[in-house]
Amino acid sequence: MLIFSNSILRSRLAGGCLLLLMAGQSWAVMAAETGFSALDTPAQISAQSAHKTLLSVARAGQRLVAVGEEGIILLSDDNGKHWSQVASPVSAALTEVQFVDPRHGWIVGHYGVVLATTDGGESWQKQLDGIQAARLLLADVQVRSGDERELREAHRLVKDGPDKPFLNLHFSDARNGFVFGAYNLIYRTRDGGQSWQPWLNRVDNPMGLHLYGMAEADGVLMMAGEQGTLLRSTDAGEHFEAIDSPYEGSFFGVIAEPDGAFVVYGLRGHLFRSVDSGESWTQLDTREEVALSAASMLADGRLLVVSQSGSLLVNQHDTGFTPVPDLPALPLAGVVESADGAAIVASLAGVHRFDLPGRIARDSASGSRKE
Image (cartoon, rainbow, N blue to C red):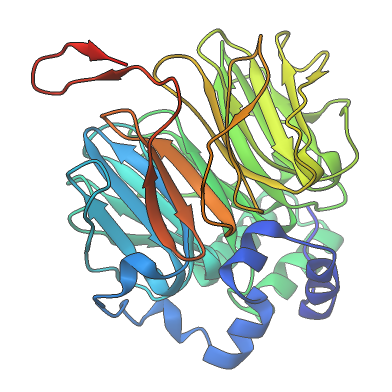
């Protein structure tokens, strides 16, 4: 376990934490300016919310859900053509959203926020925040080990307040999931978020590097993070062991392909694929030189990747990447395929819908395929 003070936090942030820089400013600076009031202040409903900074988008059955700065949560029931804002119990920046079925979903964000829904995103409840998370960690250390070093770090986390964000999450079903983020902060739930257990001592990450993404395939959990961090669990998430990495730069995410392969992506256009659960990796040429910020699998088996420079790339692993032409030049932060086969992209200037070249879409009414 390793936790950092605010001064170290700011210096590490200067080295580049992509998702949070895209959100606007350092979470430590925001904490000092707001006094953590964003934890208890609901998001303001605004007609301009669909045009603000959005950081993630996900499918909830046929519905789309996008999240971003100031606690914004948006819903679309027409494949991303129109969006409506719903109430959020916090005004903290929200970094990622995931649904495991059309009704059950979770959101993570700044100040250690975890929100949950059981009605497809119509309403959200706060399950965890950084204040509660720090207290849980301190209690866990006191009961589990009582180690003086761990106790000092846990007390420091409580003293710092909720200034460290969750950056991503991974739920396998409506009960079992992880939330994780800055400085190896990671918590696990087995009851849908009704209770959370600190998981820091189960992760082989002695330098406390940021954790950015997790994916699961064939019983293996793969986690990716800062400075080339790759961590693997083969015991259903009980422990994560560090494995050799093909790259020393940061990975900003990992996804699992339907055939069980893992894809990791990150700085300077680097993207690697493993077909043997991380034992070896093959680099795929994206022809990009900027950070790859998000990726998603399309229904037809192709890989969809977005970049900080505004590129939207489509690939099948046996061919090269094809950029979607004529896109606006703005940083892209999240991507998912809509039910009718379009790319729905979260960006620093709202959420956008783009048609994909060569896609095979399915007409929702007739079920017929169309090119």
